[in-house]
Image (cartoon, rainbow, N blue to C red; front, side, top):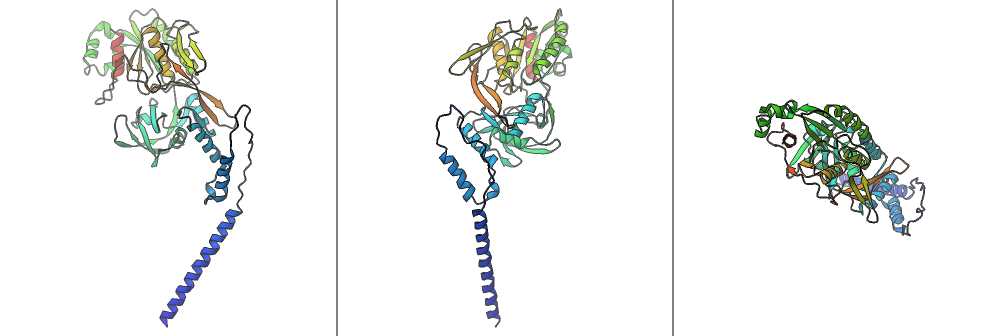
Length: 432
């Protein structure tokens, strides 16, 4: 009797399961069959001048996804459009031609304006890898040990494989006080390093500088016993009392030219008529670049009028940008500090000064970004950065992918990070 009862219960459970499965599948199938996403296509007509292209496969795939894809909650029309645009751009194989949806476009503009919320690191791409072009000075990224040339493998546990630059920036940025966890490999190593960074408001002061006696430069006086040449300079009263100027340029942004002019006007009276003044150190390390016009403006401070700063070529026409203003520091000795974080506009300045007046570059080989982008607003908050030309130094050198090699190669002392060996070498060079 118990066996019969157990059997009946089992049969009843099976029937309930099958009925539930049937009605559930039927309901879902009917719901999805009747699902009609609310999509309004604002414009389907191609702009004038665009050759005829068969968009039938695009719309067919779109329709198939809308009708047949199993999880309708994943069908976000705007994300699908953005993905299609990014896919189109990626066929160019140019990591610097990018589409920026409204949020990312706003973030980019904030960066050029000098303030944003994040970790404070300029990112780029080499091949398919997300790399750090440069951490900003004093930023949470720099304090956490992020270095120029680092490769970002994961963000909050998610692999960056296949990510675009915009996706990575969007994932890393966030509200002040929140944390982001990165897994990186430092340049020339394969060891993976976990880095946790607390986001903050990043205010970028693009220009800073001073004129000091050599003995009063902290990076020099604090390391007098660690470098024989520095020790020798500090023992020589004449050399140690000599003065040098230092100008740090961290980016070429919205306020760079204004800030630069203010600084130079403040420093120039300290330089003119100063018999103990030996020269200027222009620090372009970890400067990721910015506006081309700013690069021409900065280089013009040190070059005679009419000097070529940079040449543009589109493959169809060539254009030369030259000095058009009177610089205040044309006649002063100059050396330039560069490293692997020096990119784009900072490479233009360094290349122009070396080609025109044999200015020595000290430090490491630069990043190697030899193309020019034009930023355009698309009217809905989004933007497009499109490569419109490549640039050449006055001598005709294209730095893309190779960078500028320093005249005096100097690496940091990895055993003693407190030392700025590149700045030490720059001071030594000016005092020769």
